[in-house]
Image (cartoon, rainbow, N blue to C red):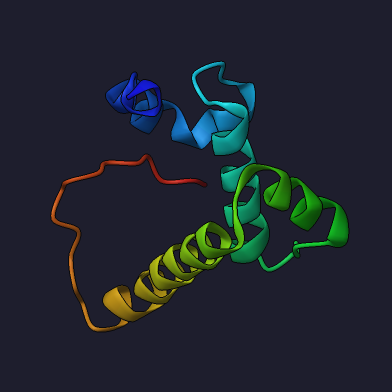
Length: 95
């Protein structure tokens, strides 16, 4: 239940997660992992993967990686076909 605490506050702070105290150590590692997978100028190196393995089991890593990959897929697929956001999660645009 503790991880569900602050859910809406966490959504609002997700763009500044590195500076936020709202996220647990596991959540911070997961967000760093997601950024490394997503950003073309980064990659998941051995140091980051070791941190991921400290916080997550192998099945959890597979599930987390699949979820990140799926969202990356959707971020390319949906705009190309004109699929509009439904307004469930409003994240400010990055300039």
